[in-house]
Structures are given as C-alpha cells and as structure tokens.
Image (tube, rainbow, N blue to C red):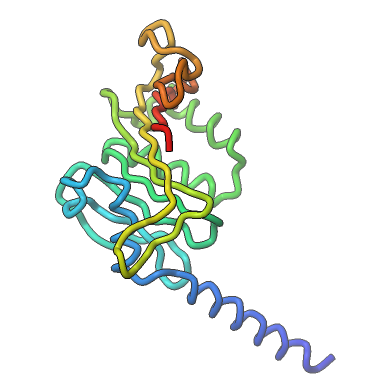
Amino acid sequence: MKYLPIFLLCLATHLVSCAQEQVPNRENQIAAAVQAAPEEDRSACTVMGYDRDTMLVTLREGTNNLVCVADDPRRPGFQSVCYHKDLEPFMSRGRALRAEGKSSQEIFDMREQEAKAGTLKMPPQPTTLHLLEGKEAEFDEAAGMVKNVNYRYVVYIPWATAESTGLPLKPLVEGGPWIMDPGTHRAHIMITPPR
C-alpha cells in the first residue's frame, strides 16, 4: 500500500509525458493550421494552437482579418479552421463553455440567449469560416502539407432563414450550398465541395 502514491505519481508523469509528446511543434502547428486559409492570406493569419500541456495559446499574431486554430492533438483525425476575426467572440465563448463541461446543446442555447440579449456580439455582416478536416488526415512534415483532407466553407449569417436567403434546408446537388440552423444566432451557409 505504501507504494501506491509512488505508482500514481509515476502514472501521472507518464500521462503528462504522453500528452506532451503528441503535441506537434509550433512551426508544424502553424504550417498545418493555415492550410485551411486561402493561400494568399496564410502568411498574415493569427494562429492559435497548443502548448505542451495542450492548452490553447496564440502561436503567432497576425496582421490580416483571419484567425486560424490548429488541430487539437487530443482528438482523433485532423481538423483546422480559419475564420474571420469578427467571429472570435462567438468562437471564444464556445471554447469557454466547452471547458466548463457544457454539452453542445447547452452551448447552443446559452449563446443563443446571449446573442439575443446583445451580450454576445455576432458579426453584422456575413463572415466565413474555412474548415479542413479528415478522419485519416495527417500533416506531412517533409512535404509541408496536410494530406487526405476535405475542405468546407461555412458562412455565418446570424438570424438568416431559407426565406430571407433563398437557400434550401439541404443541398440540392452534391456540394451545393444550404442553410443550417436558420433563424438562429448560428445560422450559416454550408458549402462542402465534393472530395
């Protein structure tokens, strides 16, 4: 029994070490994250990524209107996003609520209430999120490219509806645009080009 605390300390040290080993270095996180952005914008994006303790931190301050978030090393597959800086209040609020252990529905409901009350600032104009993801995707360090990924555009237009935009509620053709969460703070156009 007296060896149990030593065992637990060794186990905790091992788990921290494993978490640290799986976090890519700063340069690779930046290189992978910005591939979700249009090519001409990549060098000037703000990039957020993960430190050795898998805490989200700013890896690079940018000078343009895009914020990119690197792939979360704790999740399977690959996903990086780049979004217009006016979406940052919406995104950061979602991250904060997720860190509190809120469910997806709770996060949606709380942000909806806050957006209606005006305490959560949503962009007054349509704003785009670029998303790069794939279950089998990986960053090829030698090539400097993320491989086996799909690209998707999400254009946030808070409170928009199918009636106000003329968009359908589901794609009419493969990869065609459609509106998701119509009439809410999170109303957005989905465009998923065929792989």
